[in-house]
Image (cartoon, rainbow, N blue to C red):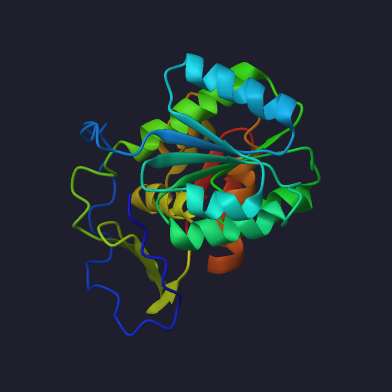
Length: 260
């Protein structure tokens, strides 16, 4: 999925749509893109025991895996054949956050999964703000890692919607799914890929509660059984960009988009 990540200074005007264009239509499963979709995995990890173990397991699952143990080589190794980067933050030559940020600029469509021992909430926020799609703390369960790998690569191999050409609009927020761009009151916002997908789903169901389970299934493309901390962090980031009142938390259930 190519993501147009231009910031709010764009001269392009938000598309003109009706007040609740296409809202209430539920997102259908999309067909797989042909096999040319990138499906390789780049493991960026300087701990040889972890890196070799990951490579062995992923290779056994049928993935094409490449390993690098430094940040700078990772920037050139993440070619068009790579659909997912598994990135450690504690690299010897440069901080993994910088690697993530630069990868997101050079490869806006690639999925980035941070795998790190840094478990503070601020570290998770920093990783997601740098452009990561997901964050998994070490030590981790191998089954959970493999589930996330499958989810991200499936996500890369599907098209977003049955009719992405028709923009969504609600309460001054316009989502152009075809261009993957968002405006609020005519000003374009810069969103990370998963922030865009999450907002598009919430706007499509504006005024209705969307369960956490459905969000994890539709946005992260998996039936999540564990923590949804990544989702909560993405919601917090969207609130910073749209206003705290834009998304209401329904405790124990999910979220509702309102943006009065």
